[in-house]
Length: 324
Image (tube, rainbow, N blue to C red; front, side, top):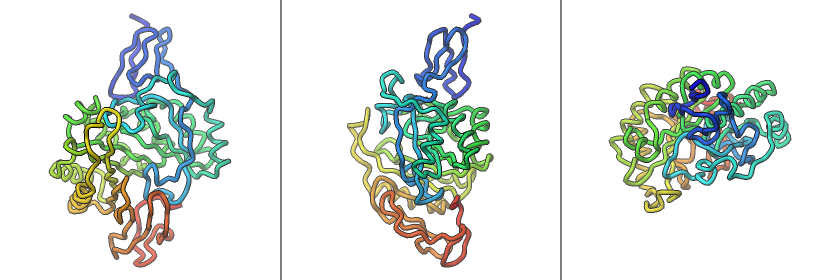
């Protein structure tokens, strides 16, 4: 009994006997101690535009050194990176890339930030944390794209070194999280509030899936919750679904649905609402005051940037975000 351990990192709360691995497949009980088996061994390493994360109000036009290991704390049926997120670490090809090397490559490729992304960074928490500490020492920003399924204590500890987070708010019902993600909504909402309290720059992504989370009443409810609990300035990205993994039976999201979701969000009081995975004018950032285009985008490319010193160049209104 003395060698059974419980992981306290995420709401799954895995209780592991000796040699058992966690649900995220990245942690193992070795003789009564919990170890990460992915530390310093990412399976995905890329240099990306920061807009790909997606961050639209955080250092636009810059590059992010992006890393991920195998594993995830959830098991979403629509995952776009399921080949690595739902894989065991030993099933992936990995790089030997400890934190010091991550910092070195980030500088070599002239990246302003490191992005912990692609899979769920909570699954490689220790690796992310140690890298983030070294990044801060080297004046490099830390960002993560996360599902937000993490316990409050480790999240607050991480926030001391994190600069920005894009959280997947996958739906606004417990039923969706239970049946489609094998998780729960409440911990994600708590993480969003914690990130706001800790003054981390926050953006939210919602993948709109036909028949599963495209009810406009629920989208309206979600957006009103965001305004009330996080503020009207939080950028919200509605992303277009394409058939993947275990949901190949569903069609891509109609553009009309995304347009309606965006209108619903704006009507609910959100100032910065974007549509992703499809080329529309809703990729651009508009000034809420004078309505002019501040940042014009085509995909991940910045065409024009009319924000100067954090303000609209046309009307001088302050723009929420991290611009330098």
